[in-house]
Length: 417
Ligand code: LLP
Image (cartoon, rainbow, N blue to C red; front, side):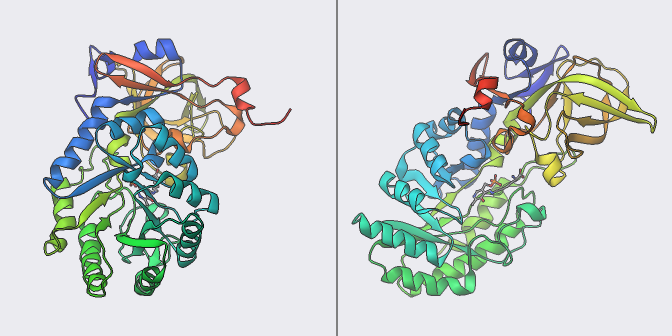
């Protein structure tokens, strides 16, 4: 992950700033993001695709702070949204509406209306009823709205079952066998314009082979649609590129990824590809900094490191048995021991690490949970009435707070007293 996160004279650094110095100002728990890392990930992805006609739409669900979305927007990206709230955020982040794609299985009338009013690039439609609803709302506004259908290629992404999405038994998308008929119906509708096809086979793919499988199917599908005069111009591949959370894991091969996506379409050079990457762009840029509150041993040889953060701030370990490395903010080079790193929440699933070999820590030490930028703060909650972490964006030798510490009053906001 160098050179954005590294140790210098035993101090954990993000870019050119000491993590400890930021925490002196913000306290804990706090999420830190490295802007350099965000931009470097984006650059790698762009380079892999070379001259391919490409629109990268940042999947803002992974980290929706408008300052983070703005980093991508400023660098030419569109945004992949999944709700009215995300549309609002995307616009606030400065996104060009004509680069916004809208996915999601349950778009309400209000959300569809808002997205039509904003004049987005396209709706990724996930059911026939949604298509009818879009057409009706567009009719009431006398508009023609661009759509693609989200088709399930039925490919196994071989990732965690909770984050695989392109299989027949998922709630997402439209069965590929039924898709052609729905495309035909869409072509008959006066207020929708068919412009694309969309898919998303899953998340955290380290092996890119399933994309190859899926894209061959999709290319054949597009050939079939085009032969029926259904004018597919955009192929939206969704997101899913993974990152190595564990040291022994290898980063996905981006050149291979780009090749597997574009090669089946070589006979269709007019196609524009849309990508919806999330995790790949942000996960590695993020650290969750927490302070050790207590060390507790029990008589079964079990040691708990109890911290001021937990499943309410980073739910991935509890929800998907995900692994996040946990490292000291100041290296002390003490002996190793095996611990559970747990939080304050009244649930036994509240842990960030189990049976983890870690350098010995003591009360008051700062710990950094790595690769925490994606699906971190966005999946946090107020359960047990703890405030959310602060967020900080680090750039070279400077940093800015992009979400302040919540007060107790903030916790009541919206409640009627
Ligand atoms: N596009 C669509 C339609 C999606 O459903 C998703 C993620 C993405 C793009 C972005 O995928 P990415 O590039 O980040 O893999 N909370 C889980 C992951 C859930 C993925 C949801 N969909 C986790 O923490 O691992």
